[in-house]
Amino acid sequence: MARTVELTVYRFDELDERTQQRVIDSWREGREFPWADEWRDSLDEFAKLAPITIRDWSVGGRDTGVSFYMDDEALGELSGVRAYKWLLNNGWVDLAAKQDCPFTGYCGDESLLDAIRTAIGSPAKISSLYSVFYGALHGWANDFERDMDYHYSDEAIREDIEANEYEFYANGGIA
Image (cartoon, rainbow, N blue to C red; front, top):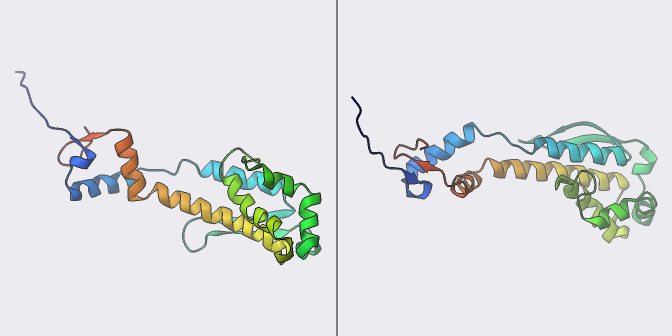
């Protein structure tokens, strides 16, 4: 025999705080970081143009960073105006001036160019070309990590739930 059941559904912000946190924690468990491939593509394309070889990289935790070496050690020792001239003569000044994600079209490109832009802005302060590329690669790794951390944060999950107007039962189950 058929029966009618009436259920009440709630917007996320109408749930009590404990239930909201349970929903957020549950949401986080099934969440994957969707832009990891794009971040990696930016690094790969940068490495094709840079005078470096990447050994390894890691994002997340205390080992965040990039292990690399300069293809020509003497090149890595260039400093000051000589390093600036190398950047200029090898197209890095033009690349850095574009500010339009020139490697892949993804924002990870810009993270790689920040240290180069800083060096170009103060040629006399360039301690070595190696340090410029070190800054570029580690800036990329740190930005990648910050992007991933935000994706898994309570704030980002809450924004996702609210932007998509999901509704819930009182126990936190999705309606």
